[in-house]
Image 1 (tube, rainbow, N blue to C red):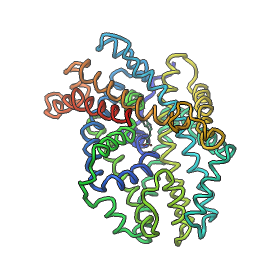
Image 2: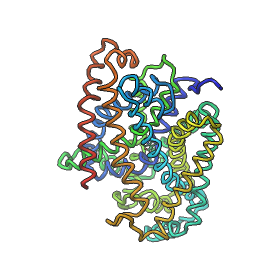
Image 3: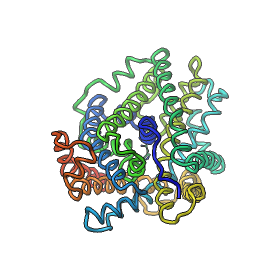
Image 4: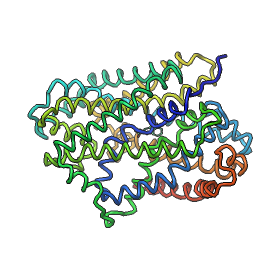
Length: 449
Ligand code: TRP
């Protein structure tokens, strides 16, 4: 047996956790949601959700992982037995493993689109493009299962190669240079947007207060987005927490992770919207925003091919540091269960996720009209819906409840390094009452939506 895996430094852990949090969700989804949700009103609600629900659950998940020091499933079995009266709490870990596999399967396909756009942009294929031509190009790509499969396979291969090498030699080595690179590219794009775009309009769109737009739907959307963006609820942070030494303060690192995640989302918006407005494009384009809308701008601006290429590399980097955090909890759990080698398991799980991802690939072409449960949802829509709206909130609420009600006060306080702190009382109130209530509200509303 090798020594248990652990991060080599607090910096490496923070890069890994921020890498997990900052992903596809930040770069196109957040800006779009902020824009349609009333700009600064949405941003404020979102910040509130991150602070009052996200950070407490993030702290809880990291705390449980570090306390048990095992893979996500076995950590929850062990803690359940010790503090919860039953190993059935392992359900959180088991469901997390399944959810992670499901998310990874489509995440890789979508990240593959970003990868596919890198050479397209650098080659200048969108020069002089209009919204019609970029829309047609995007549609044409989705119509070709072979093309999608190729980029999906390539992205999954990259994810497997990183996780197969282990926590320090793989994940850490990748994130400690990918994350600063990501940040640099983001800042560069913000600069580019400031120079070539309509910065005032983009900024106003995101930050001009309009509280009339704060509806219950916006609050719920903001809460759900906070969950997904912070990577909580399915065991990613249980796994990452289990590799943490006792000396690291969980409250302060959780705040750092949340701050970095939120800043990256805000920066992505500040990089995207000025370009959108300067070109008279539609900011509420949705999933097509970066692939259809933004490419029009890149095709018609000075240096657009280069900065466009950089933008899609950024999207890819953000995605791969997240996808490794989806593969890791699965591999860690199976490693403990089977005793098989991490590298072998990484390949096997990667292959399974790749195979499952083919359902997403076909959802855009051969199976585009196949709606297994009716309601116009493709298989991809269903996988996305079930994970985001059911499994993620359920996992989050169970983690909050377990940390708040099963773990005793003293153990939590000492594990969090908050003995005697009034902030500890606040944390406990949030995970016991506020976060569960909020999550149940989100889940209930999403289910009926
Ligand atoms: N947070 C990532 C994003 O914003 C996605 C992600 C990675 C995730 N790991 C996760 C979401 C675990 C939920 C749970 O794109």
